[in-house]
Image (tube, rainbow, N blue to C red; front, side, top):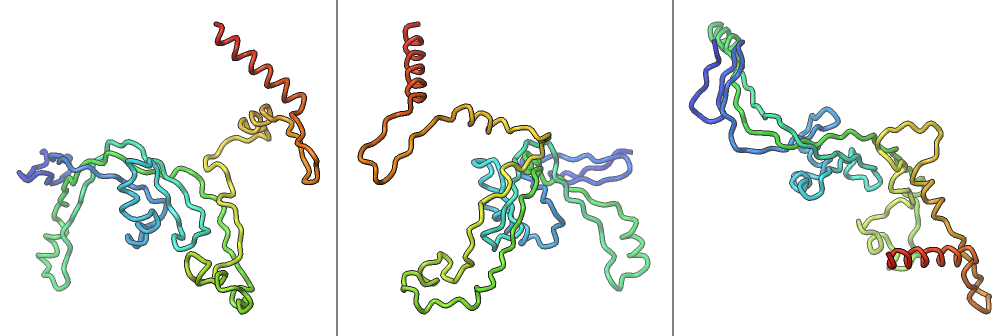
Length: 235
């Protein structure tokens, strides 16, 4: 026996034979959150809120920070991918406290109700590796003395947040790549290309009386480039 379908758009009922329903025109974007979501608002703040999800059409990626209140937290990035999924809302009657045995049995035996909310046209997946995280500990933070500092250097005037911040200078990222690859103790391709483009740069002292000229090898490279360009124009 096939599943019965109501006349309302998106409404359907489910039994052992399957589901039939009309899909509406609503489009949604799914975010595969890399964790167990217990607080929806906190999870939204980690990805920048609904404005960040709405800007996926321009950026194509989503930034997720597990500590959004920490400016030193290194985020992970999720890429937007196309999807052909359907968003369903499945509901089932609950047994209310104080219900009679007949009502409890009817709610237990009732088939779940399925509503097709819309189509999931895109999904954000966080397939990359998380970067190393550093939790700073400044032992002199609470006892730091600002009495001799000028007014412009006081935390309420100098710091963007208006409060004292730890004296730290951390790199923006520890790892250059968030995708695993087979290293095999081989030289990176971009590094090898940079070494081939290296040139000898002359050095100059502050006490030099004149500006030094180009290195002979650099002059030779420039001449070769000019000859190559002239040959191309002649062709």
